[in-house]
Length: 153
Image 1: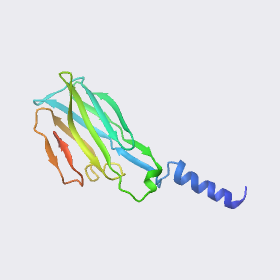
Image 2: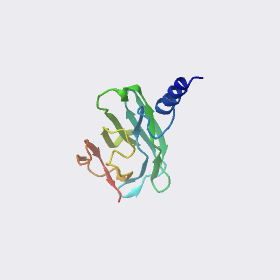
Image 3: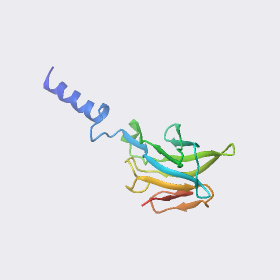
Image 4: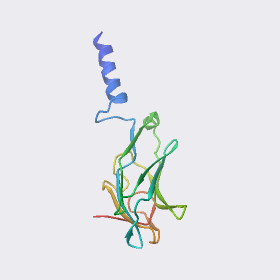
């Protein structure tokens, strides 16, 4: 194999296919989530929590709270050639649960940064959410977030 072909193959696999430090196609569409779900200050046990994100296509996954109302989602990454275009990314994000057979949203966000933990400008999503709290609009993290949750310190 000629040196040029070898160099091109290496560069292509590193930048596009591989999971190297610099991958211009890789986008964190949802950072890891660690949360506690409460109802009137009491843990919501064994509740299904739905995580949705919308970037090019609406997707979702689910988990269940433990006996103390805690749940966890790992980070979600997607890859797209769109990242190479000079356009802003906007990823719709949401967390909801089922209450009395109705889906209740408790955290929504419009993500605009491809890096992990961008939702809270570098801080991890570590939240406590009481389903009886009033919704609040948070503007301080670069996007509009509507939530019933408090960011843990």
